[in-house]
Length: 358
Image (cartoon, rainbow, N blue to C red; front, side, top):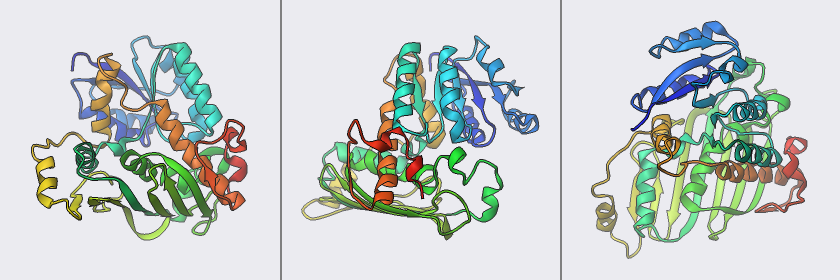
C-alpha cells in the first residue's frame, strides 16, 4: 500500500469492529481518533490502537486537517447530518448501515458528495468473505449457469434487554427493525450473487418484543433473471443462523450458516448439477487464494480507491439499491400488494418508509 490514511472512527460501539479491520491493515491506515460522547468507552477502544487519541466533539474531529476518512458508526437517525457535515469538511466518508432513512436522502447525499468531490462508502462488509469470493469466481467462470431459486434465513435472537439501548426499537431513531438493521446484509449478498430484484411481496410484523419496529418478516422476491427467492427473518430464534442457499442451473451453493454474523465466510458447499461435473467446479476453484475477510477485507479493497488507483469497491448506488429493496418490502407489507422495482420517480415510499412501518 502506497500511503497510510488517517481515520477518525465516530462511535465506539460497532466502531470497535471497524478498528479491528483497520488494525489488520496497518500499512494502509492509522486510526488517529476515536470519537464518542461516552469518553470512558472511547478510552477503552482507543487503548487497542497505538497512539489514537480520544475526542468527544464531532466538530473538533472535522476541524482536523490531517483526517482523511471519517468512519461513521452512530445510530441510524444521526447518519444523514454527520455524513453531510463530514463532506462539507472535505473528508471521505465510510458509514454504517443503513446509510440514511429514505431514497430521497440517498439522493441528497449523492449531491453533497458530488459537490464536495469526496466519496461516501456504505458498509456492506459481508461481501468480503472467501465463501462469497469463491462463488463469484465460479459465476465469472461460467460454471454456475443461470440462477433459479434461493432461500435465506436470518434467524437471530434479540431479547428484551437488547432494546435497553435508548435508540433501538424506536421508529424515530433506529428507522426500522429486522429488515433494515439485520436482514439488510443477507439481502445484499443475495443481489450480489444473483442480480437485481424485479418484484417484491412481503409481510413484516412485531411478534417477539414490545417495540415499535418489526422483528419478523416473510419476503418473496422475483429477480430480474426470473429467479425466485424466499427470505425468512426473525429476531426470536433460539439458535442464531444466517443461512444462504443458491440454486443455479448447474450449481447448488450453501453456506454453513454459522457464525451468524460472518455468513460469507466458512466452508461453503459447491455441488455440480446436471451435465456439469464436480471436476469443473474444482478446476475453476483451483489456485484460489484466500483474502482478508469482513471489515479487514473491505478496508483492504478500499485503500487503492482512496489512493486514486482503483474504483470504489462500494458506492452510493449500492446503498440506493439496498434501500430501494427495503422501501419496497415495507410498502408491500403495508399495502398487501406486490411492488415493482425500480420504484417510479413519484412513488410515495421514496420519501421514506416511516409511514409504512408496522
